[in-house]
Length: 163
Image (tube, rainbow, N blue to C red; front, side, top):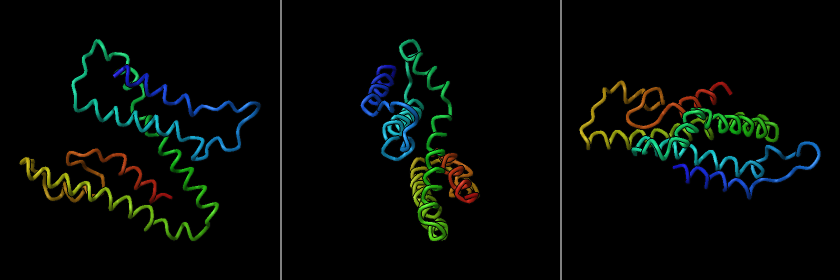
């Protein structure tokens, strides 16, 4: 995994740009942050991957230390960029964006998540894993997990409500 982590860092290099003096005006635009977002997507993928495999301690110690050191901070970038994007959309579109937000953002994310939870329900039935009906219902909100990773969606939905 260390080699994969190093290769991921190398993928950042083409996306780096020297700003010269001062701060670029587009430092946080979608295009400017693409390489960084891609890198963090890989970190999230690696985090999930390591839960399904056994990594030999000696050869992957540096990767495991890096991953443990980063912790859940790897998703804070996505929450920040998402919040900034929502703010920018509000500034450009105004009240119409706010009125469309529950349907276009909140319900869309919730629907996609619930489809995933229902697939986990089906998988759990096939493999004989049983949860209570209440647990499945709360899993549809992200409050509980039924084998899936749910906390990020729960937090995202909660932040959408606050928005």
